[in-house]
Image (tube, rainbow, N blue to C red; front, side, top):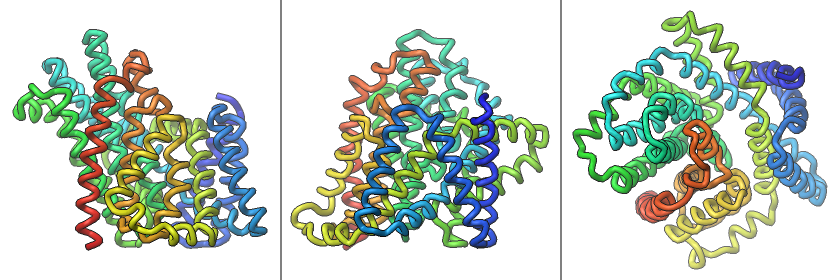
Length: 440
């Protein structure tokens, strides 16, 4: 590991601790120091980021600076940075949660009984396990799940298992507060409660898992589904505890999703390590710090998009544009469907869903389009999660291709695209009906 990467890791650890202290004490001095530290981290990250991310960040930051220059108002850039600062706590806390879960003995317990499952049962187990672990570990779930089954099966079934893992993680994106998707998008529409978006996202996830079952393992009876996914029951309690803890904190202290995760997860992880896994404290700390050193692309995109979204949302022209688009032109279910298609199409073409959300949500949230704010957020998060299952540019597909050793192109073609089409149709109806009930 380079000196710059190691220094970046320690710097981000400092920013993280300052952000946690700020959330607790509301101290403006800590706020300023944390913001300066985050800016220094971004400069170091810019040097180490991938070329695609460097270009995207330069474009996003350039547009934000240009708008501020035209408006002759640098304060909107500062407002964007202050809004993005919370991700200096959110992303490190997620990485701590991932490291804690990876060193948990419950992960080893997953291996029991897998060898007795047949191919359809393994595929169902993979969807369920990737969904459950993915909700906490994100794409790291694939690295945990793959070694348990990939070496014991044919190349064709290994491809099916890789696709199953992508569907599991992709549907977890839609409700888990530990993915950037839900935290970032909900941050763009202040006032939306975390539990509302998670509840709507859980509905879209259930729809996806049901379509996955009907399309890919239709011959598997309910009894065999229960038996194969029953091997995952050891994950249920810790998942419920950590999700309930974050939701409780968000509701009790009126925190945003990223703030609740940033503050709540370290408390839960430290408590777990101190009570039940003291021997894991040192490896978890080492793994977490190492992951800080590798965190460049995600932080740059999150901060850049947040600043641009804040700048766009502050423009008088945006609210005027939103007010000028009448509901008769685009509203309700029609708007939900159009928004899904735009975000998914952009993702397939290489435009990160974060950027599409940054540009579109300030306009849509400020207009009379007949869509509840929580439904708007859930719509974009769904499109983000679906993009993770079909876009060749997405991290879940790249990770699955690598850990299962299958060609990337096979994971975003054929039945996968039909799955996406059915999924879009079903979710647009679901969100449209839910929205009609909310705004009636």
